[in-house]
Amino acid sequence: MSRTAKRIADSKLFHSAIIAVILFAGILAGVETNAALVERHGLVLRVLDATVLAVFIAEIALKLAAHGCRPLDYFRDGWNVFDFTIVALCVLPIGGPFAAVLRLVRVLRLLRLVTALPKLQLLVGALLKSLGSMGYVSVLLGLIFYIYAVAGVHLFGRQMPEDFGSMSVALMSLFQIITLDNWSDIFNPAQAVAPIAAGVYFVSFILLGTMILLNLFIGIVMNSMSEMHAELDQQKEVVRDPAKKCSVLSELTTLERQLDCVKSQLKSLRANLSQTTS
Image (tube, rainbow, N blue to C red; front, side, top):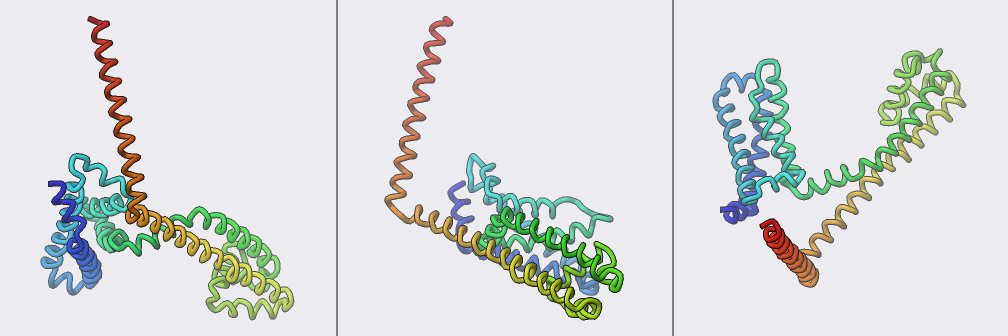
């Protein structure tokens, strides 16, 4: 039974069918945003949504059955936990004021494409792996924002209260500047107030924020992606290389022999204990 379930779950046809169902679920979530279509074909949409949910539940049940006597091994994979959580939230009887939450969860089913497509898993894995390094760059970016916000309030706060009147307003203005979205609308009035100070202030902030720090984020992500590629290549090499396969199998055989020795020693200890107690 478990072998049949595993063969079906690992087949390309089953994998492609699940991807098609996920895409259909995303299209269905978009159609449900049209109030006229929901009012006209509400019953059909509910039936289709229930069918999609049934397919997802059947997929999870099949993958659980593929693990045989140890179905909990299914949850050792983080992507399986992610899939199970989304499907479980869709099954919960959320209604009334929480109906919007259920609709949001239905849209999140489209995120299951990440688990279905290995390339997307690679991208998400690289992003997650780079979070640690991104944290330090984010701290540095926050310090630069804070320093320039304080300087902007002191330099341009009185003449430009709509852009630098307070810390919160200055931080929002700096965010607009770092995105380069109509930053000249803030620069031109500042230049009229203090030409030299405005030039140094804006040019240095754009160079530090946009040209250096944001490129650091890109570099960290690219480095994480290269590391993920290297890890995947090593895994594939272990699978393909017969010598490495043999070494792994020999290690497993050695471990099994050691386990057998431990079991025999435990049996002899039990026999000795039973004799002494008798």
